Image 1 (cartoon, rainbow, N blue to C red):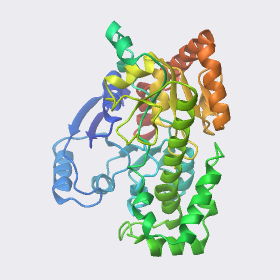
Image 2: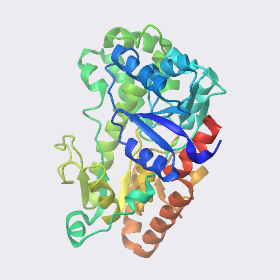
Image 3: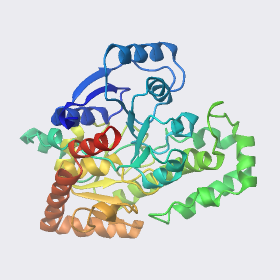
Length: 393
């Protein structure tokens, strides 16, 4: 097969990664058709199922592609015996607990090695590890104007949620006993002091899991899902709470020492010293902020245990200097202190900010190195080519 002539049906559901992936497919010269109907349920939606089946009967495709694993798509592809290629960009992804993960026509690529290590034994021939990428060409087609510099130039920027509004634990905390609340508070406090290793799940006893489920009003995922109660509690409740507490603490600490510009839609009432800038559009504003900030801060959602989130690739790909928390996969792909900089404690973070604000030449060179590394090794074009060759042949 001519690798430039893949016929792909791209089923979109409004993920922020879809535009970049679409650009990558186009740069490769692949033939892409789109299905933009949104599913009412990732598992069962008669109308969606019928439309997808009809599309696969109308034209012969080499594969169907989605961002993240969607069970209803897997079911249809399994019936038609057509490769279903997907790329996870989040962790956790509840759909991975679906029994459909075992379907033989799946070709699932996972960005977080810890996620891959957990789920790959369920379908070892069809689950692969693939870190994320950047829409390099698109983001570097942007030329900064004088107005852009006026609007976005800053010492330190952070773009993102504080996770208070995303944290499920906040919605149930008043229903929990002092024992459960104390257990969670202790775990979060301990985890905040450790970077590069997530021990929350390993710290949950059987008795705690049972008690938490009882008090939290537990809702099972679904009849054809394999429940992993301990992992779900660790990631979606305690993990998100840890992310919230880490972000509030980190942003507060930085703002007490330096001028910090914060773009977010979250409540900032607990951060009186930040320079609140409102929300930032991910396609127009965000790359300009990356380019105009002396230091771009990244904080990984704690359930992403080892992997590198999209924000890291986007920041470096846009030419921004990246300062991020340590993740164990970073040294496998980037040289710390050369392509990007990391911190492993709050004290280290403050010291690194102070250092790089005073060493502009070094900061600019690191940003250039990171941008070159992303261009040469982590563009969507490169990653998607590899994925399709592995998945389809």
